[in-house]
Image 1 (cartoon, rainbow, N blue to C red):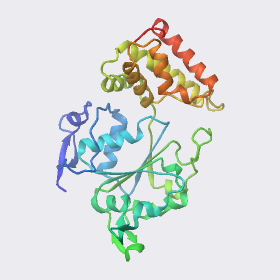
Image 2 (cartoon, rainbow, N blue to C red):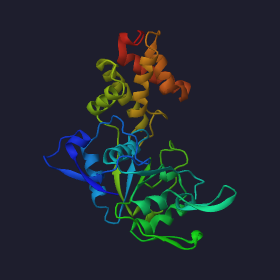
Image 3 (cartoon, rainbow, N blue to C red):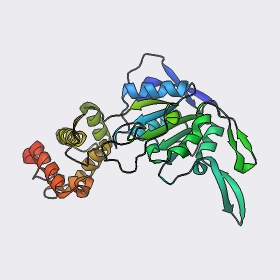
Image 4 (spheres, rainbow, N blue to C red):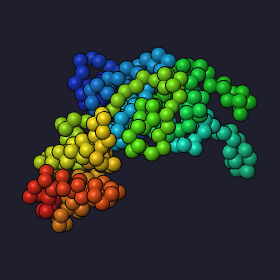
Length: 316
């Protein structure tokens, strides 16, 4: 694939020194390039990912942080703007390495070997994104150790096929933990990962955006929502997150939290049901609190009512 240089400021809508460019691909027609969507990039996270894309130096990149903080969307939207094809997989506790490498399947009455996302990404220079990687059995993930260091991928099942990693091949993993398991007990199914596997990754924490960035995200995704309403929604989200996170020595008082994704959903639903009585209450229930325990649901709605004041009982 033909490479192309992209101006960072123009491509990502951020402040960057004049002439600062990064490499991507010229062909924007590949079916595995993510769909470009409105996105507000945070400078420090963009910097870290672009540095890794420029030179992996034998590393993978592990993005950790709370649910809905934008870990996967960060990578996907960078790839979308650089025309970089992506192989994205959501991991789970029963996933085996063969699901990533490839396996024999029945095609038109005969069996043939079909390469998995890892093999395709390594062969063609795509990005491999392992979403929720800390849900996967660490003994299976350890099978990636060699290829992360640049060693060839040997597929014994396919007659010993050898795939030499493409120079542009990169591996991203995301998780709500940083590989050490979930001490809070909130993220069910998270497993402690193999130390040797985690040692092969650069680790970047993706927290929730600050209020100004989150405001931009809401207004770009739901442009008809009034700015004052968006600000009040963000204030509610901050308080919910504070009660969810707790402190270093005490667990949080809530077992649900309000991600940026949930904020956008709340804003969008508020417009969907515009004109209905108690619209913000109703939209919040669909966006988040219907899955909370009754006491927690009541607490979150009480927080929202206090923040919204007279707006709470009004129509959008």
